[in-house]
Image (tube, rainbow over all chains, first blue to last red; front, side, top):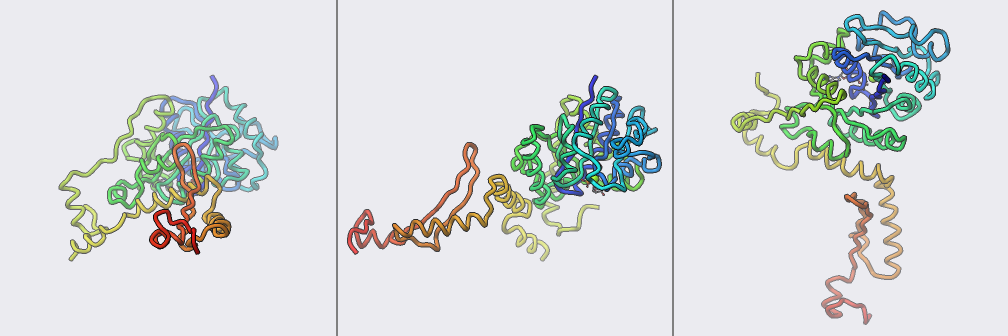
Length: 269
Length: 99
Ligand SMILES: Nc1ncnc2c1ncn2[C@@H]1O[C@H](COP(=O)(O)OP(=O)(O)O)[C@@H](O)[C@H]1O
Ligand SMILES: [Mg+2]
């Protein structure tokens, strides 16, 4: 058995990479997969707080690279699940402390003991991005249905292809069905047509994601919420299941008529 | 009154459609490494070259970049200054055979 290394990247910051890595880690581990989430955002460590593991970190990625500990010692196990681990980023070090070949070596060392290595990439297209992509077998691009995010995603998709790491697959995050219906947000079809790339998931805007980030318990632990369900759907697709993309619930004619007559902002209670 | 407002707001494309159109252009330029600024430079140089040989209407010249399914192209639309009037004055082909 050899793990699949899946890097999650985006170009633009703040679109939801870390949220995706944390939740896919949880969703895959809940499905019996042995998962390591790797925070490659050196200097801006975030994945630990997203997973609620910030108090359990002893060593980090750079400690491993510089030989201060063994790789196994740096892995933080999430006790809520059988086989979910975090390899934290260094918080105090600068980005140059890590090179692409370090990431490749570390991932190769972890491959034989796990099913998935999920790499959380920093924003941008510089060295940190290259480090995160270097060990990847597959790349997931996260974007929001907004002009700047889609533009940066396109740039990254081009770079991934040039590196021979393609074809990347797309996660559209923070989609607001209400805005799409009103015509004030691009729909999935528009984004896919522009980026010419395969879709692996649509995650709606969901307040519970923010609540989950506050408490350090990713929303995928409970899959009742729309976003939680979306992350489980992506995990199932990663495992090869055919999961249909639930279409945006289209309002009926009367509902649409009421919406149309109601002034903006005064939504249904 | 609210209804009237809604009706007025319905005019023109919604912002989602505008986002999509803007992205179509931006991505096309990004991918081809052809910036809108470069198109302006090309336009000026095309105007200079063509007008050395044919009288053109420099105001009406348009140079655009378009992405197609097979091939991407630069399209230069160059209106001739002698178009209609020339036809009437000099005959159906609009040839400048007399000055
Ligand atoms: N689907 C979503 N619904 C609501 N909030 C979200 C969603 N996805 C991400 N967020 C919020 O957006 C912010 C940025 O997300 P994060 O994962 O840190 O982005 P990145 O890692 O790309 O910088 C966080 O505060 C997160 O809680
Ligand atoms: Mg992040």
